[in-house]
Image 1 (tube, rainbow, N blue to C red):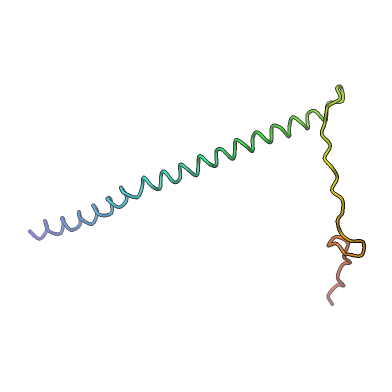
Image 2 (image 1 turned 120 degrees about the vertical axis):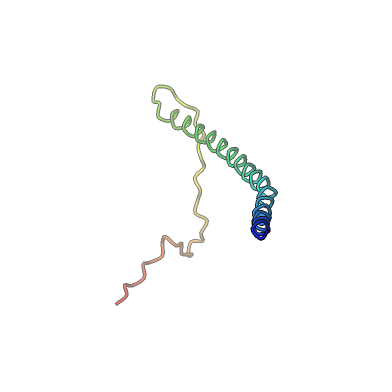
Length: 96
């Protein structure tokens, strides 16, 4: 009879863990599925943008036909005349 009682305790513990897994696992799966769907949408948008960039580059490299290429305005330096920029700063003296 003690063997039967020990077996029941062991089965109740295993059943408890299985019930927890059974109740929590669908939420985990659906959360992962949602993240995967969002990632897929982002990847599709990135793919679309990359194909547009490739098409523009292909149009730029074709010397046969003139391509209507949008010019990107050059960003001007907005620093004041006396203001140092990080790339204009002198190098620090070497450590001895």
